[in-house]
Image 1 (spheres, one colour):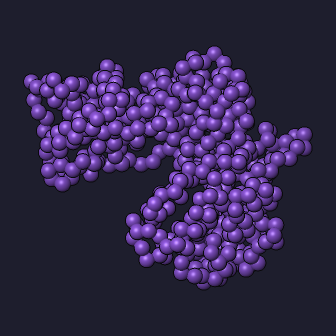
Image 2 (cartoon, helix red, strand yellow; image 1 turned 90 degrees about the vertical axis):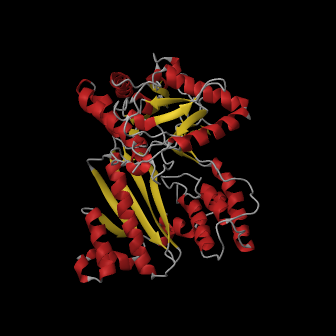
Image 3 (spheres, rainbow, N blue to C red; image 1 turned 45 degrees about the vertical axis):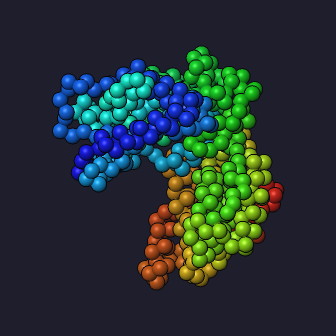
Length: 512
């Protein structure tokens, strides 16, 4: 599949040199990055005397700047999707590999159950994994440190950013490390297998002693594979006592008096207050306002737990209205859409006032899950609350997750939409139970639809195909749980189906 690739790589390298010559600071950072690559033994220069292998691929490369990074602002990314003379790229010829880590939502849900929370990441994870020597010829680049030098070929010796299987290769190596060395580090092995998303660790423990032991074991276990954890952040400063200051995240101090918000898998977390935060990342006005600009801005509001679902559903409705407009991606939207967008854009700026407790359960408590479902003609949604009661009788109720959906453009009846909401509720409940790993709990589902409740009381085969398929799934997902009726005015999922302005959302006792 792979043909000649050096010509394209050379053309793009010359363009890169011109770009760097116009930006001295970027050039300095780029050269430092490549010098480090060479010094650490992550790449080697190919001698002109070496025989050319049968299969060779030259990777074009470019800079990606990330100003928010607390470590490396500039990262060199290698383009494995550059086409060769045959029309195929290296990525076209490589397989992705299966997903072997828990999904992001599961990890964030689990993160909310620990009284003591910890996050960290692995330094240069990809580059700690060597690629077999027979394959490094497929990871060649062109480079020189000065215009006075000839352009030389280099081979990247480790797993490389920009290739299709890189994520799998690195995460699979972590799993193998847990299998090979995990017997000596039971807590570290468990954390390595279940609390990592690529190179990010997001986990915690029920007690201080267990948290400290988990941190120590993780450090020792990963060191066995040449990996180093850094940017440790926690809500309990005692967990970090004795640790090298260079391994502590910039957002954390040992006293936690001046801790700043950090990011855990894209979710803002304030360790000292142990609160999850939300910020509006919508870009300020763009002219002209287009479908592409609105979609890009809306997608930047990252809330995988759905804790702001009653607010975000307004953006989803706006996108559906936008989709019905007879305009292209880069055409200016109608005045009606512009007014709706400006209203939503202005309102969402206030969301930064919203903070919610990260931890949702009391220590050593009994757990109950309450799941609510509701639908309207335009939207449907579901939300799950955790009710925990500790041995002293203290009760804590907290929203843990919610989901919202826009109703299909092809109108269907309200009872069928209510049934779709019940399906969504059962799926969300299943994810929460799996993530929290609760062995003993009571669970109750609530809906204000008497039709849906009647459907669920009977075997699925007595209903029409549409209803039967959904009833069957709900009954399977909620086996052993109760379904009860609730008035719409008492149903928090009703807020999702109506949408809310931020001011009303912040004051809503029903939602909180």
